[in-house]
Every structure is written in structure tokens, then in C-alpha cells.
Amino acid sequence: MEPTDQVTDQQAAIGILTVSDRAFRGEYEDRGWPAIRQYLDAVLDSDWRAVPRVVPDEPSEVQLALEQMVDRDLCCLVITTGGTGPAVRDVTPEATEHVCQKMMPGFGELMRQVSLQKVPTAILSRQTAGIRDRCLVVNLPGQPRAIQECLDAVFPAIPYCIDLIGGPYLTTDERRIVAFRPKKARKG
Amino acid sequence: MEPTDQVTDQQAAIGILTVSDRAFRGEYEDRGWPAIRQYLDAVLDSDWRAVPRVVPDEPSEVQLALEQMVDRDLCCLVITTGGTGPAVRDVTPEATEHVCQKMMPGFGELMRQVSLQKVPTAILSRQTAGIRDRCLVVNLPGQPRAIQECLDAVFPAIPYCIDLIGGPYLTTDERRIVAFRPKKARKG
Amino acid sequence: MEPTDQVTDQQAAIGILTVSDRAFRGEYEDRGWPAIRQYLDAVLDSDWRAVPRVVPDEPSEVQLALEQMVDRDLCCLVITTGGTGPAVRDVTPEATEHVCQKMMPGFGELMRQVSLQKVPTAILSRQTAGIRDRCLVVNLPGQPRAIQECLDAVFPAIPYCIDLIGGPYLTTDERRIVAFRPKKARKG
Image (cartoon, rainbow over the protein chains, first blue to last red):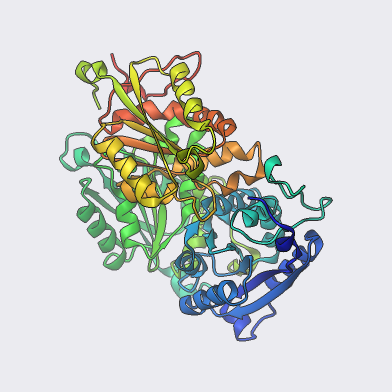
């Protein structure tokens, strides 16, 4: 776990995947993707570029998009928005689990816990997170309101997670989010 | 997510499934089922009828009962009691997972968290929840004491969950439980 | 659930499994195993013996070690340390799930929650627990600092869990940890 300068100099690719039948058909304005983009712009200090995409709530489409964002676009982080509820078309968590080699249950637990302080229906969100190769995939709910509160909760752990899976060294604006790294892992 | 009057006028069928070898053999009085029935009577305002059943702690029996309550009896909600512990005969969570298309991890997380404030052995309960077609299945522990505290924690989210999966529009006595629905989803 | 004197008189075998490539190759001093041993010495009042082992972060090796500790060494409890993170070589939770018949999600939830009060990266720990036959397997992180806080959180529930799966009757030094047992289950 010693990040090299070479890795630091890479521009981090971050996927933002909107999963929504209606956004895909252009029936409503996707407010999830701009909310995530804005969040990352405000929080990330290191160089990054967004890899955006919109897919319908179709398991094969969500899986394919995730695979391409990781395998072809070499994203170190993919944030999904939408498709985490109990309805029959909500399939994002299953698609995430399908493409990941490892699941990270702590992300969903913490995001639900934080959202529960706002609404009792937070337990209906099935959002999860997982690792595919050198990429962390994190599901967010579709509501823009929930996006910030969820990211505020888990983002402090994301840069170190990406270190641990061999991705680029992300840094944050510490006035906004303090990325936690154990002392021995800090870049000297 | 626009419930129609037609759906509202249906009488909601709610399954109450006791999973217990001893209750099945009549060796002890099942106190789980009356506690759940009483709870629903006190909390639900809209019309409903109970579909009760007792099965032994046998995977195939629990699965079959769940399938019949959903597929034949058209329950929109099935609440199980018993069989959630670590013992070899405790198989309710696995049977639930087996018959459900989607799992709802937030229910178990919240119920364990609430029970933990009472007893440290709350972590031994493996209770979960999931969706089979248009029905939400929720596991409760067997102890009558735990039934109320668990239902108090998750019930505010249950009517909206049933809306989202296409079930009847449940209403509650708001002095007892306030069913949370996002504004846009409220019946106007 | 009536523990007999016969069971009480058994010496409980408790497995301590270090999962670490570097500890296995002797490249660093394993501090997880002594921390767990010391904890159990301080907390357990009833007779027990340690079954220690160190394996590399290799799924087949972790699985085999767990199987042997349960099936051959008849451990009633196996505590693992290490291999719970997101890195490619971290495979302890998957190996645990592979050998267990039942998973106990409440252990991981509570341990992450407790660790979260110290470090936001606690959500990166994928630690879980499960049952194989008459043995409870609990994953701990690798950091010695986290070992005590995690065990303090879950240990009060462990003796009763072992009762429920047919293991020996463990007792604790109540100045240190109060093992919770429901009244009807207490040894009279």
C-alpha cells in the first residue's frame, strides 16, 4: 500500500451511472447525475474526469454499463443513482452484485443509517457497494436530496479504499471532506 | 406510483406465519401470532384480513407456506415469527431468501439495532425481509416482547413499500404509527 | 436449550486464525493472535484452550483451516483476524461464508458501527460471522487496536450463541464482560 507518483499523476476516471427508465427515455430531467458531478467537483482536489451514462432499469443494461466503465474506461470509482428501491424495475443492487467480485456491506448500512435520520422509508433503499477489479462501485438512491447526505457519510472512506484496490491517489478539499488514511498509508 | 381507487377498495390480505416446531406440534401456546394480530388491529386503519398459519422449522414447509400466502392468498404483506436464531432448526431467513426475488437488508439492520438497545443478544437474530411479486415478507423474532419493538421500528415504511410493489393502499391510525409517504406519492 | 453438566465440564476449544500473507511468510510479527489470546484469557472464566493457526490470504487455505478447526479440532468458536478489507488478497469473509451453513449479519453490522465511532474507514471492513455445525466463526479486522473494541461489542452475545448451537457453556469474568443469557436459559 505505497502509492507511487506515477499513480498520482493519472487523471482519475469516475463513472456516474444514472439508472432510470424515465431518464433514459428522456421523459424527465435526470437530476441525479448533475448532483453527483457537482458534489465531486466541490469535494475532489485531485485531477479527475467524469464518465457519464444513462441506462434503463434493465439488469443486462446496468451490468454492461458497469462492466464497460470498469474494464474499458478504467474507472476507479463508479457512482450509480437510481434503481435501489423495492419496485419490480429496481435492479441496480443486483446488477452491482453481479459484476463485483467483492461486496462492501458497510456502505449500504451507513447510508441507510444516515438517511433514516431524515425519513423512515430509508430502510426501503437496497443500495450496496462492491469491488470489481480496481474499481469501487457505490449505489446511491435516485433522489438528489439523498445524494449529498449519502456521499457525505461514505466519502471520507473512499480515497483509502481506492488506494487499497490499486487505484489512483485521490485527494479532497479538506474544508469539505477529510479523506481518512491510516498514518502508515499516507503519502509522504 | 399512483394508487387507484380500485386498489384502495381491496381488502388487504396479510399473512401471519408462525414458524416453530413446538407451536406446530401444539406443545406450547403460540404467543407470536396473537401479538402480531393485535398489533395490526391497533395500527391499521384500512380494511384487512389475517391469513394465519403455523409450520414447523422445516425449510420446505416454510417456503411452501410463504409461496402459498403470496401466490394463492395474494397477501401484500407476510409477517413471520420465529426461526431467526442461530440454532440448527432456525431456517426462516434462508426460506425467506429462497422465495423472494429481492432482499431488503434495511429491515433486518434496523430491527437488530432497535433490539440491541434492549439486549446484547439482538445480534443473534438473523431476521431479514424481501419481496416476492407484490408481497413484502418481513421476519420477526419469536419473542412476543420483541414483536412490538421491531414492528414499531419498521412499520412506518411498510405502507409505502407496498405502494411501490403494486399492492393495496394501507392506512394507519396516526396516533399509533405514522405511515411515511413522500409528498408526490400521497393519495390526493 | 438446557445445558447439561457434562457439556460444562468440557474444555472449550477456541480457534484463533490469523489470515495474512506477511505473517504466514514470517515477514512481520503477527500481533492479532496474541491480542485475541490475551483478550480471551482476561474475559473467559470457564476452562478453554487455544487452537492457533496462521494461513496466507488464499481462499482454499482459509477454508481448509476453518473446516479443520471445526470438524477435527471441535472448536466451538473460531476468531479470525485479517483479510477483511477490500484488497484483492482479502478473502476471509468469502471463505467464512463458504464454510458456514448460516450467516449472522448482526455481528458485522455491530462491529462496523462500533469501529465507525473511531475511524470513517470502518465501512471498508467486510467482516462477518457464521455458523458451521456447532461452531461460531467470527471475523475480526487485522489491526490489534480494533480487536478489543470489536470483541467488547459482540462478546456479550457469544456464550448464549454457543449454547444455542449445542456447544459448551462458557462463563465470563463479569467485571470484564457480562455474558447475556435470557432468564429461562440460565444454568440453574
